[in-house]
Length: 403
Image: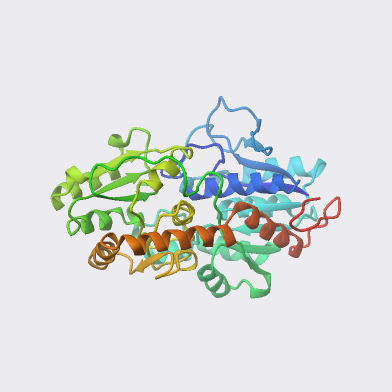
């Protein structure tokens, strides 16, 4: 198949850890690479945010990235990109008029809007992965939600217009149905993990104290890092490493807020903000942890727990969104209520005191990833979703085996 991935703000080439660079970038990059391994032709369209970027880049994984001129060629917060989606869609439409893909796969709601507009009347099926839903974000963030006011209404229209929606978890399926998307047009296609990179064996960083917690994610309040720092008060001889944020993490306002909170809690000397950590360095950091902590207020899916499980490390996660699909409570880790540092501290204290249970959780986590969450398995699920959307490929497709 010729597959057009549309990811307007999340380039697979971007450095991870910034405010708008995280799980979606990983998802698009690794899914594209896995689809190439199934012998599909994949092109990722993302917005040009630097004037020096070439129009097209061939990646080492075999897929192309096209930088679309839409808006200023500079970094723009994703919640301010909506006015440029018309130009984005027009660029795609002009490309696809002469060389149409077999399927278009939009990632995030604005990419979905551009995809629907560009593919209209071209007889090209459109599949949509939202990655996060505006109605959920508004529910948890309230007045702090910076999304454009049109987001919720637009997502409803996209959900009804596209040929199929690829939900990342069961919780999202229920949200989509409430939005009016027929269940018959929804497939569950979770995120994945690369088991060749994230695996139990290999080097690992050396902790300074008897126990280490690791938390990974963009430095935004909803990720729950404040709750982990609060719980640290009840965990003596335990350090916390937070990976994520700007390259110069000390310049990040949220980083300063976290350090101020650590100081107020009396645990500043046991908290380290590591800033951006490369994908290649991440497995060693995860393997250095006794427990990986992932306690956001809400989470559409969450790749970090999968990466930790693949590395054989137990996970303590909040019981929200996709985390309830991936983390099996009492088997691969523990689930706790979101925004509850007391419950979090209790769960962590119990797990840190029980090395046998940590080992059992780690082994079970690795097995679960190998059975369900490798990117090759996710690519096969995605391939089936494309066919259900009505794709008519240029050649016969053997699902799971390429062209």
